[in-house]
Image 1: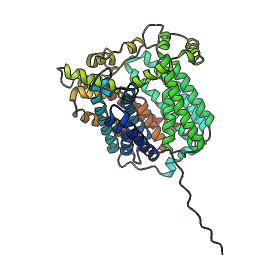
Image 2: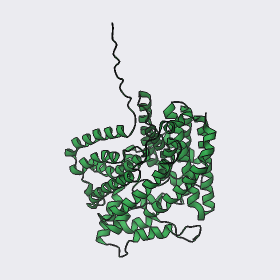
Image 3: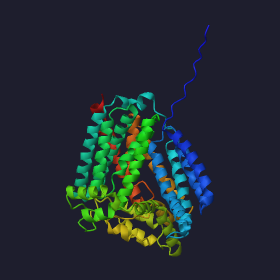
Image 4: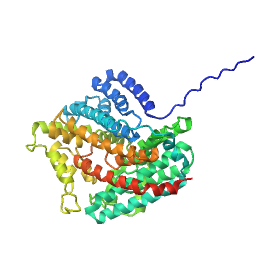
Length: 478
C-alpha cells in the first residue's frame, strides 16, 4: 500500500498590518546599522523603531487602514529632518531654527505615540468583519462604481463652485467633496481584490491626476494614497504583478511630487495671473500647455533642487522647533490663547456670523515662529505652525500631550463610528479614509481646522452614508 501524505500549503503573504509590522522591523535594523554614521545616533535609532511602535499600537481587528497612514505620514515629517541632517552632515539642531528643532523632534514622536494609544482606546472592541461583510464588494460591478465615482466628482466640483458663491456655507459644501474619496476607495478595493476592472481603476487615477494638476493646489496625490490604502484594507495577496503595481504607484507618487515641487511656483504665478491670489484665471489649454512643456522638457528642471525643496517642505518639525525657540524667549502673555481662538472661531459659524475673520495661518506663523514664509506666500499658499506647536504654546511639554490625547480620542471615536456601521467592510474603510483625507493630515493641521473641519466633514459623511449608500449599492450590484 502506498501512503501519500499531504504537505500543508504555505499561507499566502498578504499586504496587511502584520506585513507592515515585519517590514518595520527590517527598517529599524537598517537604521540601527546607520546610526553610528549619523550626527544624531540616538534619534536615528528611535526614529527607526517608531514605525514598528505605531503600527503595533493600532494593529487590532477594527482599525481602519487610514489610521496607519495618518500616523506614519506625520512620522515622516519628523524623520525627514533626520534625512536632511544626514545629507547636510549636520545634527538636527544645527539647521535654520537651531537646537529647539531637536526638542521638537522628540516632542512630536511622543505626541504620535499618544495619538496611536488614543486610536487603540477608541476602537477597542470593534470586531473583525464577518466573511459576508468583508467580501460583499466582490459582487459589485467595477464599471458601475466608476460611474458613481464620476457622479461624486461632478458633485464635488459643483459644491466647490457653490462654495465660492456662498461663503457662509462654504465649509459644509467643500466637505461634500470628501464623498469622492469614499467612492474611490470602494472602486479600488473591488478592483484589487477581484483583479477585474483594472481599466476603470486606471481611468479613475488618470482623471484624478489631471484634475489635481489642473487646479491651484497639488490635489493629485490623494488618489495614489487611496489606492495603497485600499490594497491594505482588503489584505491583498502579494504576487509579482501587484507588487510591481505597488512599487509603480509609489514611484509615480514620488515622481509627480518632485515634478510639482519643481514647477509649482511658476505654475501658480501663471494660473493666478501673477496676482498672488489662490484663484485660477487662465484657460485650461494655457495651464495644460505649461505643464506639458515642463513634462516633455525634464532637462529644464533642477531635480536635485526639487528633491531638496520637497524634503524641506515635508520636514514640518522645523516649524515646531521655531515655535519652541521663539515662545520660550518671548512667551505670549495670553493664557491658552491658541485653544481660545480656535474654540471661538468654531463657535461662530460663518452662516450666522458672515463678518467673521478668515483664518490666517501665515499670520500666526509669523507671530509665533518668526518663520520665513516669503517664498510660500509669494506663490499664494499659507503656512501653519500646526496643532503640535499650538498645543505647546498653550501647555508646554509634557502638558501638550493631554490636549493631543483629547484630539486623538475625538478623531478615533469618529473613525469608530464608521467602522461599526452595518455596511460592507470596504464601505466602512472608505468613509473612514474620506474623513481623514478631507483634512490636512499632517503636523500642519491647525487647531481651528481640526476642531471645525473634522466636525463638519464627519457630519456630511455620516449623512451621506445614511442616505446615499443604500441608493449606490443598488446601482453597483452585479
